[in-house]
Image 1: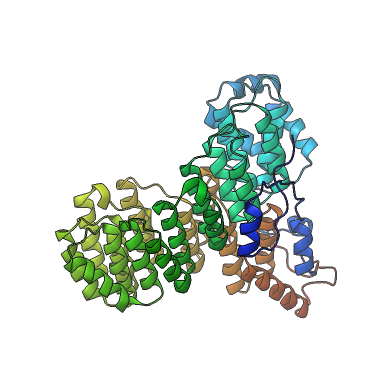
Image 2 (image 1 turned 90 degrees about the vertical axis):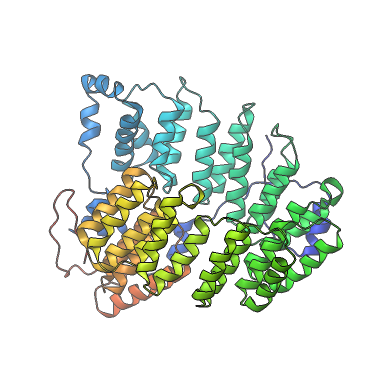
Amino acid sequence: MRSLFRPLKTFSRENLQRRFKSSIQFTAEPTTSLSHKIKILNPCFVPIDYLQGKNCAFNFLGRLKTAQLVHSLANSDENTKFQQYPDDEIAIKLQSILKNHENCSKEEIERALDQFKLKLTDDLVLDVFKHNRFDWKPAYIFFRWVSREGNHLPGSGVYNQILDILGRARRFEELVLVFDEMSERKGLVNEQTYGTLLNRYAAAHKVEEAIGVFNRRKEFGIEVDLVAFHSLLMWLCRYKHVEAAETFFVCKNNEFGFDIKAMNIILNGWCVLGNVREAKRFWKDIIASKCELDLFTYGTFINALTKKGKLGTAMRLFRAMWEKSCKMDVAIFNCIIDALCFKKRIPEALEVFREMSERCLPNVTTYNSLIKHLCKIQRMEKVYELLNEMEQKSGSCLPNDVTFNYLLKSLKKPEEVPGVLERMERNGCKINSDTYNLILKLYVNWDYEEKVKHTWDEMEKKGVGPDQRSYTIMIHGLYDKGKLENALFYFHEMTSKGMVPEPRTEILVNDMTIKLKERGELGETGVIGMHKRKRKMKSREYSLPY
């Protein structure tokens, strides 16, 4: 089967418009080695093998665990018991095997997995993937091992999940191989596959590849419709490729016409991008198109004005709509309330909040805007008054994870965290990766080693991390405390998993290597001086490497 995509090139609006009119052929683009880039950025990089050999207290990450589980399960009696476990327990044990062998070759990992005669199911494979969403290598090796087993053919869910994992890690060479294999089996490619590919290609700024996925929907056996068109525009705009989205929209006018929803997506894209000039231009285009403006159109434009600090203009438009008795929804009120709060005009925001009951009911976003800014000025009595009101109203006003994240950010002591988490649980909110990373950052800042370990372990156990943000928190936290050697360990651990560091983190790492070299703690070859005192290490114990 021919390859999906061709390399992304620099383009202009006119160039895109000309080229999109013709059929687009795509070829696969080989990926650049991340490790090669890192070596260029950090010529004094500390080798991970050396750090692993040192008696540093990093064993909570799982690198120094023994392989007793693998050896014990190789026994035939234990293997029989292993097959009797529920899927979730088997997934945890398989994850332990992958973790214990993460520094081994692909062949060694497959030999360890080959010791078990498992009845493979999609649910079991997805459970293992859940623990490796941010670590593409073990997930991909496990997928390949599953694929070559003759007694199980992965379904759409498994393929979609591995595509998402590879796309998140920007391993597009492997992604194309998996997708080609998937598309050879009829009926596997579905709308979820389409959405995953659009998301990951747009996130990696591979615009032509994302558009190529849309253009080949018929080849995948799925219909080319307006919903799919909206989905493409949405993902392109989400990742700041608004100009490309607008150009493609214009090229498809003959096919889809001037659709107000598509135009709203592009208008919102310009607004989120913060380009008020282009937003005003496109606003005039919408009016000229004779499309009937809806609430989302007005709300989007009001939001754009407020985001760029043009609150006066936004308020005049809002008051004009109010006086003309125009239908107004909660989203418009939320834009105004949030903008007033941002400008520290909280009394006015509370007044609009009270007035809105005449037109519509508030929702959780309305309350969150108020709580966010009240937390910043430590008006905690009012915050908890609003929180109680949310719980009483329930329904669309019930507190969510965003609500409790604002509360967590306002905390001053570690003893206050459990109370917020307990209330969060009572309201049916699950702790997601954003909340875990927020808690991790709080404990790192408070220098609470035990809770950092507990949070990290919980993230691993529940399959919500550690992700790129988790490592960034640890690297920057350790740097701030002057623990440069240990910060470098986390950096190498992160990049070894294929996670792309932020530019500010790369700058920090270069600064750390220079400082260590100046202090004589980093040799010319990048190896930390052997004169450093070695730390004692106990199996599976944790202490922050300070």
